[in-house]
Length: 231
Image (cartoon, rainbow, N blue to C red):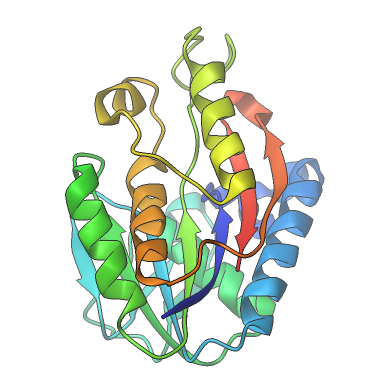
């Protein structure tokens, strides 16, 4: 049963060593992620699933290893015991780093979801994850639109801000309705599928989300970043 979830963005710049001189710019975001992870761990899950965007739909049921060497930083991370034969996508590597930063040493598995994954499949994935142990925690990773400003990675799209505002409102309420997959793709919102997995996971509980808090909602660098805590 799902007992708690933390929602965080997954830019590698979250890792101070990667951000280097720009690291202080995201101190507020890191603090919000730390708070969400503290709440997640306080719920005493016996298993944490890290769910994030990836190039393919793939399960890391024996953990995996990753790092930030592609950004010039010799920093390695792992999910759980780590399976050297499984290389984590960037989003799950950031998730592994967040868990290590929070001091989590319990059982951990990963799920990468591709941006093409339809709502119904996301929902089914969420149901399966929530039913995988008596007390399940989720760390859900993904970014909002990367088209919030003229200097954003995808340039400005006027649809970006309303899309992100709807996501933020859903995270604050603990209710995420199905999101338009085509629109999310056009807006370069990598979090759409992971967020829908989270929405599906809540369907296994007999009660609605008891507590939902939106801890961060901003668009540094023109990309929507959200941090939320559900329990």
